Amino acid sequence: MLKTVYQKLFKINDTPQKIAAGFGVGIFTGILPGTGPIAALFLALLFRVNRASALLGSLLTNTWLSLVTFILSVKVGSVIMNVDWRATRCQWRALLSNFHWKYLFTQSALKIALPVAIGYFLISLTLGLLAYAVALVLLYANRRIRHERKPLK
Image 1 (cartoon, rainbow, N blue to C red):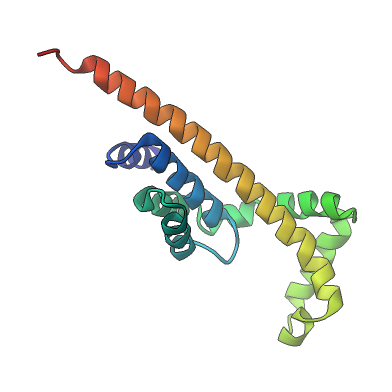
Image 2 (spheres, rainbow, N blue to C red):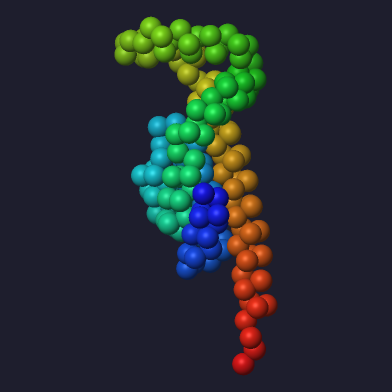
């Protein structure tokens, strides 16, 4: 799977900066819950980066990585909000097990949701920036190798 992503990323005909930025935007929206491919395409249009690489990054991380990063998001958001992450995690479990729509709009639900939202945003942003940097380095390295392999005329 990674080989396929790698090959598709290098076949995109655009500047390395736009491809890498699109990929970073896609990773960001793919990890952030409630967003995904449509948000990746919208942000790619808004920031004028490569839409194909944004879609690729979003599809690569959409949903499955959000679930993996949940506990990390709870911990990061709780540290920033200066609350105990274990209490926040237990409150999330209670919310999900006894879910009612009206409860989402109460003050206590915001107290539970805010640390998780902040944590997800920071983790998504960090991984998106990291994906941008790694993709940019790889794209430049690939183009340099391809340029060196071309026979001189």
